[in-house]
Image 1 (cartoon, rainbow, N blue to C red):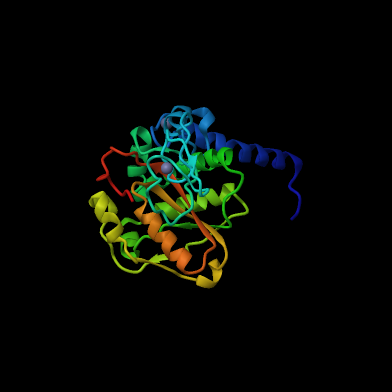
Image 2 (image 1 turned 90 degrees about the vertical axis):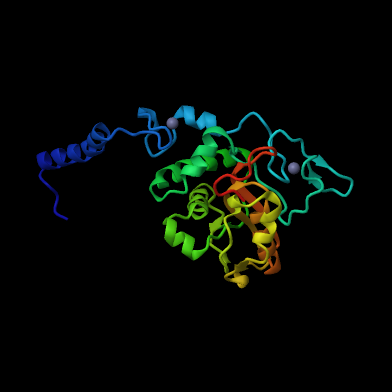
Length: 268
Ligand SMILES: [Zn+2]
Ligand SMILES: [Zn+2]
């Protein structure tokens, strides 16, 4: 391309530098959760206050079930569990430290994320979660796969939160590939509308693996926004292990705590 005359080029560069500043002036960066304008939180991040409120940095989580404030103990046969999960039979091996408990601002954010117009919030939570996980784990499994949603629900809501979260995590962990490996082959009731005891039955044998040849012998992490009883993640792990996966772990943003109301929007 022919070089612009020097004065014109200088003016052009000044314009290019000025456009983002003008956009920031007209539409100041704001927190996608609380809406507070914040000059240091450009790029779709949550503001400093929301970041602190949504991340549980004070309590360790059980490595088996993800519950906060539980000490993970190793039994004589080498299995790790806390007092809450030692009698549970999860098919997934572990839950990486969740961002926080399903309470307060994080609960409100998870509920809001279901709406199609809240994609900036999903991305902001995904970034906070990605940074959190990088401080907690060295790397994630080879493959990250979102919990599947029925195709009709995806059309109805125009939103697929687990997929967006998985894609966001993929930008933080370059060795991990994001791939939707699971499908929901029949319409199930929303887990959030069911009592804890009915959730496993609702999802019984409901998931299938799209490409079993891709997962053979691989370690896989299943991504979801919330874990309540673990029934959704259990069904995902069942399908993946049956199709040949070497191991399955769980990645969830929020962990519902015992005693909290399980009949809350979209909890699994
Ligand atoms: Zn905020
Ligand atoms: Zn536990």
